[in-house]
Image (cartoon, rainbow, N blue to C red):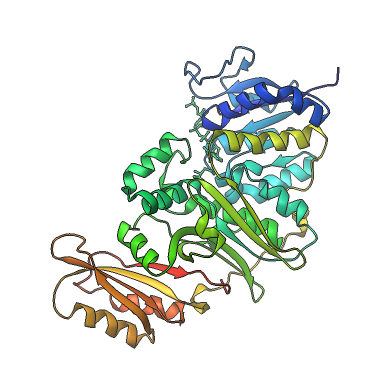
Length: 432
Ligand code: NDP
Ligand code: HSE
């Protein structure tokens, strides 16, 4: 009998229990493909008594998952806890230091500590794998690191958060209320433990930094991502975008601009004829442009137990085959640091929406601020009473420098007519 790859599972929630189900159901086929069985030997979570819908009795329960690192009967630790710091990070450090291979679904930890952990893995000659951390079941890490390895990638962008996409597209199709759809996404197991990571763009930013590091060979730079989420998007914005021939999608966007790294997560107005406008529900899609491959698009389920378990077990199969690979697309010592590109220098059209007090002169005040900042307006719609005494003003600018749009809004920041901060979304174009 071939020696199995002996794994320990840390975290038995949506993803952890999905991994157990997948290995139970497909174990024999996986053993054929990997050349040896993958055998769960130990498990750990917070609450031993919790019913997880899977039988844990065949496995050793370990209260202190820190013990996995020193257990000679464990070859590989799988982390499905979450959080950039705390028990997940402690476990990663101790496991790698003690020469265990490590598989994780934790994009927050990779985004904040990926370079340190990759260094540890490479020093110890063990695997650090994280396919599940970006875009759920889509093999995009492997696609970029291996499949597109011969290319210079010019830019990488896409829909990277299943929860936000589920919320936006359900609001778009069924006119549902934001909070109710978020609750559905949580019930379906898509959302992070703290769903503000999803709706405020942080989770997408974690994933974007990983894609950027893989694509451009630059060190991960989470602090360099400009982040805005979907929390303030109203049904009226979705309606206005539709009237203009666009759909709203939360996009992560990374590119090298004049030798500098540009990274942004922001809701965009995506033209209806663009493939990303047709990505619905918790589906994710990543577009990468290689200088020889041309445009590559990876699409599939971005969240949920099954797709995420599929990505984790794919990493385990690689490890069982003895295929550690590099952690990123090149050895860590060769990854350079990039200066940050300034978004203010970018030009494009923007959608800007204000909620204002319904009184004479307010429109003139807004258009004057735009004029003074050299931003010209392509179209403007004043509509729908948000509530008694207030109106929505939505506009699309002509091609403008982003810094000028910001300046025009700064001029209005003390205006007593504005009810809350304006929402700004860029219109996706080929230049982004
Ligand atoms: P869950 O909240 O469903 O599960 C988390 C698990 O970690 C639980 O079993 C919990 O134990 C355990 N845990 C939490 N804190 C501790 C702690 N301090 N000590 C020990 N165990 C702890 O999360 P998910 O399964 O959804 O997500 C896990 C990871 O996978 C996260 O990094 C997430 O970002 C990532 N991910 C999730 C996806 C998804 O669709 N859900 C998709 C891709 C990645 P207990 O059950 O006893 O409370
Ligand atoms: N909360 C994440 C999402 C899970 O909604 O995309 C998958 O990473």
